[in-house]
Every structure is written in C-alpha cells, then in structure tokens.
Image (cartoon, rainbow, N blue to C red):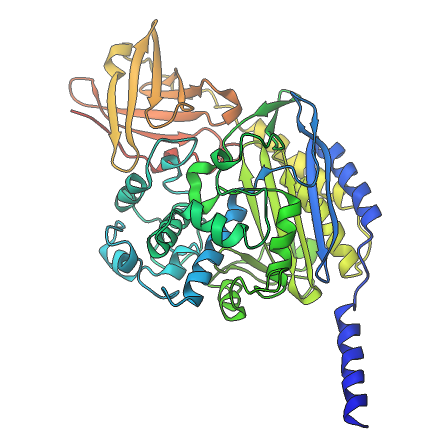
Length: 515
C-alpha cells in the first residue's frame, strides 16, 4: 500500500473512531428536560451539549424568576457555584505554563502569612494539596467565614485558618473543603498581581469569548437583567430566594455564567486546553495534572448499581469516576435554590452543562444520564422516574427526621439574663446572645442572614430558629455554665444534617464567653 493510501486509510479510521457513537437525539433530550422539570418542580433550566467540538444544543427552558415571569434562554446567567473550582485550577495551570509557579510549590512561598493548625501541614501544604480536598480539614469546615453573605475580607479568612482543628491527618482522606480553594484563588492573585476576579475575567473568560460571564454577581453589568434567581421548595410551594451567587466564595464558587458561555469552556476542556479561537488556554500537560486523581474515595454501591462505578476520586478542581468503563469527569455546584452540573466524557468528545434555579440535583442528573445513555448506546432507562423515586423517598425520610424529638428528661431553663452576652470563636468571630422583648435572640455578627430566636429545648440547651426559614438550618445551641450560672462556653450543631447544608458548619465552632 502506498503512503498516500495509508494516510487515507488512517484518516478514515480516525474519522470512524471519532464518530463511533450515536449522535445525540436533541429532540428527545428536550422532552426529557421538560419532563424532568415538571417531575422535580424546577422553574427554569438551561442546557448545553457539546459533541465532536460542536455545540449541538444550547437552550433555556422555563422561568428564570417566578416573581417576574422572565423566561430562561441560552444567555441567562446562573451562579455556577463549585463549578468555579475548575476555573481556579485552570488559572493556576495557565500561570504554571508561564513559569510563574509549580503545582508542588509550597503555599507559604506565595502566601507567607498562610498558617494551618498543624505547623507541619503549614510547612508542607502545596498548591496541588489546596485543589484536591486532602488538607485534613473536614467537610465544609470553616464555611461560616464565607457563608451566608459574610463581611469577612480575604485577609481575615486566611488569618482564621490556623484555628480550624483538622478532622483527619494530612493527605490521608478526601473531605470537600471550600476554604482551600479560596486560598488557591488568593495564590492566583499574588502570583498574577491582580485580584482573582480580574484574573479570571481577563485571562479565562474573555479569551474564551464567555462574554456575559463574570467572576462575581456584583460584576454583572446593571444593564444585563438576564439572570436567574433561586427557588426553594417549602410547604408545598416554591419560594424565590436571592443570594449573590456565592460571591464570598471567590475561587471556590463565585462565577456567574450561562450555558451559551459554558459551552466554550466545555469545548476547550475537550480540546486539551485549545480554545475555539485556536489559541491554547493551558497546555495538555497541565490538563493531565488536573484530570489525574490526587485522592480517592470508596466507590458508591448505589453508583455501581446505576452505572457500574468502579472508582472515584478528585483531581485538581474536577471529580473523576468511571461510567460503564468510560472515564467521566465533572462537578456539581450548589447554592440555596440553585444547582448546576458539568459532565465530560473525553473519550467520546462529549460535554454537558446544566444550570437550574431549584435545588433538586436529581433533576439535572436525570437529564445528564439520558444524554450519556444516547452517547454510549446503552439500554433505554427512564432516568427521570428512577431518580425521582429515590429523590422523593429520601426527601420524605430526611424531613421526617428534621424535627427535634421531645427530650426524655426535660429540665427547666435559667432566667434569660443568665444566657446573654458575647461569645467568641477564634476563626469565626463574635456571636451575640441578647434578650429582646422577653425573648432570647442570637446574632452571628458577620452576616445579616444568621439572626434568630432561641427556643428552649431542655436545661441549658436551646434550638435556634433563624428568622429566614428558607435557610433550613435550625440548630441546637448548648450552653456550658460557670459556678455563677453564667455562660462560660457554648457548642452548636444542626438539628438535621440531612436537611441542612454542610456549609452551615456550626459543629466546628468553639464559642467561648468574651470577657
């Protein structure tokens, strides 16, 4: 065979391999989207699918805000929450390509003030450790410094890290933690000489032609009214609920984007860092680092039953697992009332992004699995019904257990005045207990959202009922008293860990009476 014939044959083989799976039936997927929205009571959803470097679907469905009736389209902005983490990793990858740092640089070399509870971990923590959830901090530990809508500066957040006692030894266990990505965002700022927000917009979003996306809700132009608001289901109806798209999360979760813009991000990821304009955003060498599992966790039995999951791990800003033997990368993002999901199958050159304004992750997963079913030519399943059954069963159980039980040995409380005063936690700051109109009130001083009333439970234990019920974050507060029957310290924990978001990390507070 001549060289020319060999080249033609190779090209044909490459072409066949490239298109070795069925094209996505977008009409079918649109029907699945509408069915899923109806089944899970999702007001609005936007979906983009990238296949073989083409955007085969980018469309909005439903309503962006039930109060206004404004419709979702492909350019409607949502908070992508933790899908921001991959952008922060990409920013660092770009700086590494430019020779300005390395994945294995020590964090203290770029942030000299960086300190953790353990001096050894402080000294050894690297950039890649920040991005792979293996710091030793627990799930969501310290999130009350950035959630909900706090007033803490980046300097105050980093200063608070040294007071967070580790939940496990360094690099031994996967535990999702936002503050390490906040820290990674500050590394981007120090190395680049501009804020994390400016760097992301100028060096990631703008080159990708993600024209409407911004690294923070407050950075959306006032002229752009095309953005969605979250909705929380409670008492049989949906309640519009605005939060600023996790702006305080910075490198861990602050980006606002649309599926039209996110499709360019998917294309770039699937092209090993090459942007649609032909330029390289980051090298394939750095992508290999981001897509390599740096920490693993046990495969889920339920995931094995659904799609034969054999392993799962976390890279640098990306979750990694197998799906029917195919490598699958992705991430979820959650805000109260708003969730998002990104999925990549690099071997199939397929990417999916779904943004929504209700907090039912299963609605997004159902659509994603239907797309993957098409791509891999799997047996047909009704994913909406399969996931809806589990979703509503789990939700019913969770809410059934969300009400505090009547204490077996009820003890009366002391006079209200005995509990009043200022409590202080070294990483969070001040929490005030005061009496107003005969009622005990609690005030987390770094956010306007955590104000509430204390209802007596038993003895020196009360239940905090937040003024904003949609937070779904009722918590126990247990006071320890000194010999004079005044508060010496207090601990807190969520009434329901199944209902309350893990970022309400009351459990990590060590509240001491302020003298």
